[in-house]
Length: 326
Image (tube, rainbow, N blue to C red; front, side, top):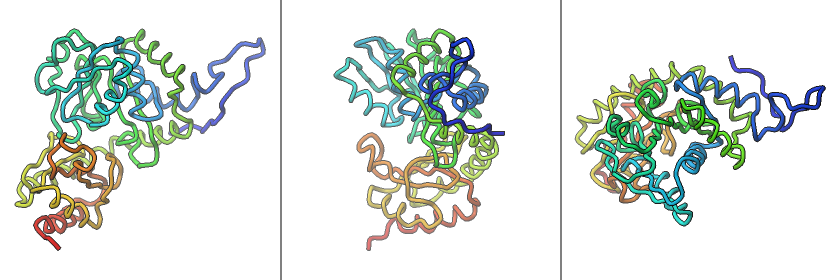
């Protein structure tokens, strides 16, 4: 059950004039600590909450990557990672992309993989990553701790955009990093405190609420996604359908960019919107954001909690517009 909401920014010292477990919100606050315990139990380590998934990525990489170091990124994974590291290039961060189904490149100082990748939905080669001397960060946003536990697969950090399926209701922005090593935890905690990458009490409270229904939501969304993936794979307007065999996310290709735009704007029940992992099903063309990084006709479908027959009927109607030109 979700606890009380404490929005305090500071707490009184004890009778001896010493700080208690909570003194200033940038260090710790009660709602943050409560949800971190729940997140750590799910991931099998010690969790740190951040105000966004990209905040978690930033805090972790700035802590773990040596000055002038090279980070190897999974190709076809979330495009924002590469944008971030290119932006930080003047500070000495070098980012290279590689096929995460193979071996990470020699000379990498840090490895960032995604399980599965968004939106191409490939799975990383965990054994090859674990054999590499560099530390490994795994973004498991799409899998959630219910399907992939990176710390048990040789990774040093498990990352999640908690905005997505962990929160699950499209009403919060948060990120999570979970580690098993106490020394790394303390380094990450210090970076978070000094940089102020701290999520609010309201965000932590909402996320703790979302975790209470995570298993039920994920199971229904996954069951629906399995049905829709099979139906999409056999539809004549779909040239490629990608589904990793688990989870709520599907990506599929229409013939070209124009066909994808006609499909995404023709749905009625399904929202033409970005983001993923929420209770409402969303469909969008990713080429508008990612350009040449993904096929021009790629559509990303985040399956929600609606009835599977209703969703398929909506998709069938929309797919009928793939070849229409008004």
